[in-house]
Image (cartoon, rainbow, N blue to C red; front, side, top):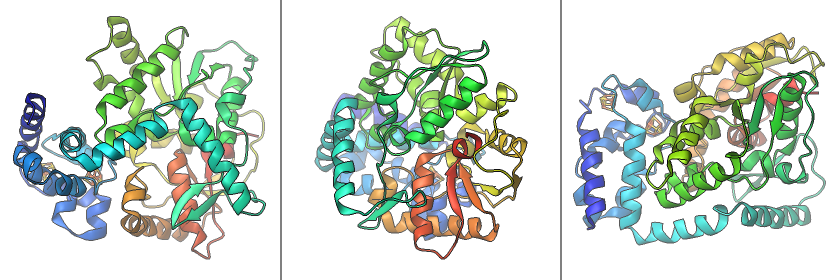
Length: 413
Ligand code: SF4
Ligand code: SF4
């Protein structure tokens, strides 16, 4: 085992040792709630990691598989009375285990080929769109996700957002804003990107959409691919460095969480100027709805529909990390809609978790769907395109007439 891996295993053990096994994290863990298996809770995973050095040589694949049964929602970290940085420990352990497991090396190589290069991602997505067009009949506005082998795959029906974006001049003077679109909005939900630019411009912001932006990088971290994550962060720092920005906004709670809390983890290998830039981004990045709420009343133009009864699905990263669940509600109410609350719960997607553990992901999601349906709302609104795809896929199997929309779709014309 390399010295790096031994040091990493030591650091993880130190973090995991802080756990006093109180079990409070079980109450918030969507995976534990679905399975009742101790090993699926944060406490169970930390118990595994206390002996991470042995696991690295004994059975890294099996240990990694057990650790991967986690949506990385951050609920355990937010609720732990001992302040155990559970998600940080999980990510570090995944890196160590992935380095020790050849299967994961193969998967990471594929991930790198597929997603690390924004141009290659665009080519792959264009290929997927062409296959989708050949396989499916015309897509209605209400049918935006296909179920391919049971997996939710958003239909790509419009030109990608970033490549086709045309800069707009603000009508009133305001802040300079970089829009980080994220993969799903760029490729599958470009109308969300366009709507957010319109709303921000209306509110006086000058919105910059740097070409050639790509993935926020969380899929690499989740697969233990820290080196690829660093490459992605540096790529975006180079894109942003020439722009004098006041804010960075994203239309995705997970992207916002990643830029705010995970990009600053990259310090080794950055120049001083890059280090300052990553800190500056972390300081000012926020969800699109947060900035709209901060800029005052941007919603003079009527929203696409009025007088809806809406329930809000809060993405896990909004609840546990960004703690910004009030802003979107304020905007929706100001736009004349009636809110009905649902009991917050994870939708079950969790990025690659929803692909690798599809049955478990659906089990978690069914609880979310029941709570949405119980509200009797017309529309369930969220601020995460991943949650949107998962909820639409769940709705396909139900009798419910409820629709799922990104907040931007409801707020923009
Ligand atoms: S809440 Fe914290 S201290 Fe308690 S069992 Fe979970 S990780 Fe350990
Ligand atoms: S991050 Fe979420 S899914 Fe993972 S162990 Fe913690 S509460 Fe459970």
